[in-house]
Length: 191
Image (cartoon, rainbow, N blue to C red; front, side, top):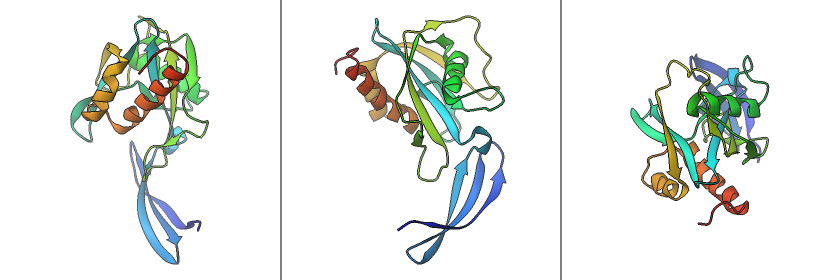
């Protein structure tokens, strides 16, 4: 049972693009509003910056307009074909810009396809583990609408509690589990 695309059109375009998608499923037609970032090739990077000696991560505390609150999360951002050559390049640039950090080693935590942001999104998240970085002074400027505080030296055992308490949005919550699993696999932490 494959869905049949009947029609798709842009109904709103600003920071996000909203599409009205009509599909036929099991002899019935349905309409859905779908969001995405077409100028970013529907791709974003999210980075888990980990210090192997301290067993800590560097997070950002960032304004989330949807909830009108500040939440903890991992550095990340959208692919920009004018600035980035690849999604890995996006990850490196966003880590520099948001966390003022440069990593020595990189590991992908998702396939090249990435993870669908949510049910009503075309965006895919590409998640990475960044190991043993250093803080830099010559970082790139942040985007004007980003209100970010860098939160350094957060112990990895704190992360599951913050997910449970709702202190992180869903993409960062997903990255907590992917990052912790990779760190256990590599022998850098025990949980």
